[in-house]
Length: 440
Image (cartoon, one colour):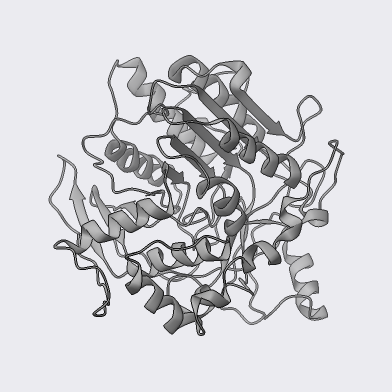
């Protein structure tokens, strides 16, 4: 790895700048958290009517035939390895997941992000990281009866629940399922956030946590995140859509960081799978691993991603420890003012995010809308599988992708600035643009 650090005379000097980066990342996120996302932040993620397209008929009942492309492909390869009594590493998961999606005709490129640097070749894929209790939150939203309805999100959750019980040793009593059917709690904003907070409250060092989300994902203008608005790291907040988002709003990446990632205790191992559009950095981790078409892994970390993480920490009311002078300089240069101007302002802006309802109601949410962006990195390295030579090869285009039945939609550079999949979002978003309710 190499990483560009701008330092001043007061900054703690350490021999290895990469060690400095790792230390700072660990101070901002005490737990070991990693996330597999179904696509990059600038991509959409497919919803399948037939999971056998990706999973080769290896998915269990009772899920039926619909499912997310990412979840279906992931479970398919995990069951195949289990059938062969073979362990699978994180590197194999990423490479085989990309291969499976590509061979099934999907452009979406999965990626892995994490709170720590990972040895992908030497780390088996597992949802268990210690000898403690194993807990899971599984969220699947089909948006039944709405424009933008999906088919496979509930099935994703039922399939994944069966897998983690039978193959990963999770027990029913420690699994919370939120899906929009008639037999489970509804995946409202309050229920999702309350369940994430309960995972944090119950977890101690040695425990394992699994969080799965299948549904719509999107992007919103950050508005009050001055660093993100003025930096090259990201132009938008990534979001997930609760079933009642028309009443309660989308769940921004800041809320997930503030109530789940930042506060998870040290020593807890957390694995997340986000099968939705624009999910690449929805948890804002500093380390990114992307499989290329040449069977290699591009590993990336950057000062921009670390500074964005630190800025979220400040917005959430956190006080940066010593040794962050370079990060503070970057924040103040990009966002303006001093870091004292921003302490806790995210909590003030997102006050409604912590509201809790006493009961679960039925909702009929309309279609979702979002925008798209592309991101850049300033440090990268390449890992290679046994199958190929090191190469960067697959440079990801910055044009926007809009193909298939997707879990979200994107903006293209056409005349009206809007291009939507056939999920029913186009009319609503165009109307909002005409009415001036969203920024151009």
